[in-house]
Length: 245
Image 1: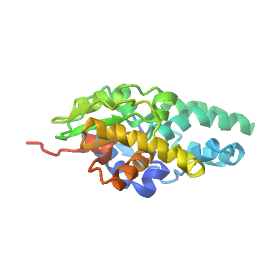
Image 2: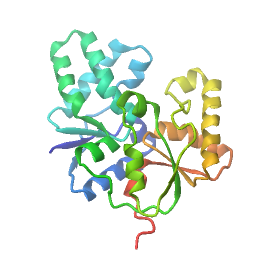
Image 3: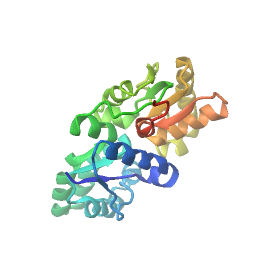
């Protein structure tokens, strides 16, 4: 199986350790991963703000970069959701039947990280060790667009030494929402503060999620509150051998 890593703009620019963690986990499981150098943005920011025509060349680039792979893995429910559900809309709008066909072929091969581990590899125990009290924030696109469900929690429960505690009102949005956080800053901050308060109610040492965009938003609020709660991407926890004998 030919597997490609779609690192996403956010991780490439701000959180490169997440991509390294994905590679660590997959290689531990015997999966060889390619990194197509031609990859760029998935086009989600343009689609979300109504610039569908401008998104067409971005989707074309995605097809060129990833065609021929059996699976495309993204450590982001947000970007994986865009590939699976928004690319088809963009391709159909373009009037290019060839692009629409290529997108229809690639979209079902695109997976959020936890989906790939659980559904494609059939693995829940990845051999990780992380002796900390953890709570998990399920991000909006992973829940509502992809239907990832409890796959991340199933993976976390298999991590040696990890204590997973439920996050109250877990399904509520954290308020980031990409450009929403810029255009509606006051509302975004209020939603983030609600989420941060819920995190503190759990007594967790670490907040984990599958999207670094949400973690940056919640983590920034927790940091300004000097709450003492770390934020980590799911992949980083699953790559950890902390506390292993």
